[in-house]
Image (tube, rainbow over all chains, first blue to last red; front, side):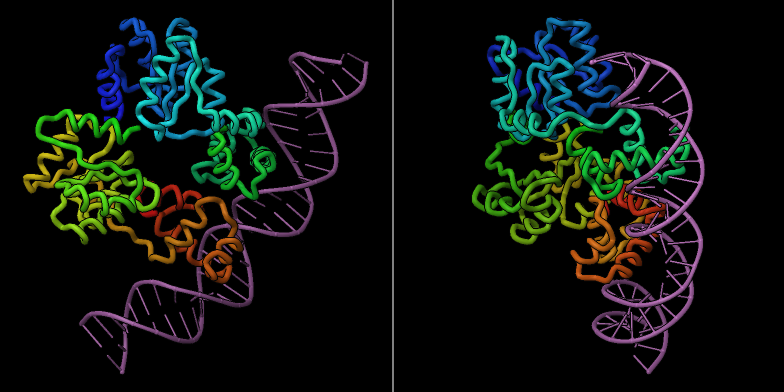
Length: 190
Length: 190
DNA sequence: TCCTCGGGGTGACAGATGTCATGGGTGGGG
DNA sequence: CCCCACCCATGACATCTGTCACCCCGAGGA
């Protein structure tokens, strides 16, 4: 519904034409190629494939297509990862609607469009300190599984799970796993 | 952005006019009164006041205004609470955009619009078994606070916090507080 | 070559968490 | 009046979590 609404909104602009719409991340590249789009608008939370991964794949497959990320959550870590994935613009959905068409025009002129406050936050916060394994364990702990379950799921010993969680808790400056999960989520590290 | 886009979309319909837009739950009633709206579209997650609470207040203050809830998450518990709050329709945002205008027209004719699958799920799942206090404690536990913190925040003894959490864990059929939080969230009990 | 970092592991230990039994108080319904 | 649900509390107990010290291995970088 939101996608259709935003597409309609963009289609009302004189100089913008919506040439394709898909509801899944893993259909982005085919749609972009078949439609010959100049700009791709991607959400981050999508079924099939994350908008971040889709952005990276799209950049690789069709380097000429500009990429605009439009997402609900303005997490600094998302911004960072979006930029690393080759995005040209990063918008949050609670920005005024006029910014959307504006961003499309500006990336077509070769500009990059980023909320300055968000950029500052991303720089202030520093990069993701978690190692891949720590991230795995933290993600597994996120939905409330016990150490033994996590150990089984990741083929680790229970003690190792405890060790990884302990370092993750310290790196996030949290006081237990739940808080660590919350903080890592807020920062976009999960 | 989403609100503006949906408003534009609705405004394109011949028989629908968008007479007001607000971004906060606690501004809904004033806007509805001043604009003389026939139908109010409410999201659940809003700053200021929940769409559910806003719906209840609106029903009380202006009983003639039809209420349509449009939300991201189709949690059965949300549906239940929406209906108890006096909503006339409940839509999820990943439904096709055409359903939005359709729902507006139908509630104006006095119909109630609910996704049948969601209605079945809401009935199958049963009502919220948590007592108000259990809900408070679970909510406080949700962001990773320790028992002692929760006890301080709610002016309870630590043992009482443990007891409430224990019953909440059993009622949600979870195995620890984190899982209980996840399940309660999924069901819309928080 | 040595040093560091990531991955994986063990054992010990304190403190947090979850369960249970048991008690008290209030207020509403039958 | 009694019963029940909810609220609040205590104490005991077992288990889970989080921390720390220490171990091994392989891959790089200086």
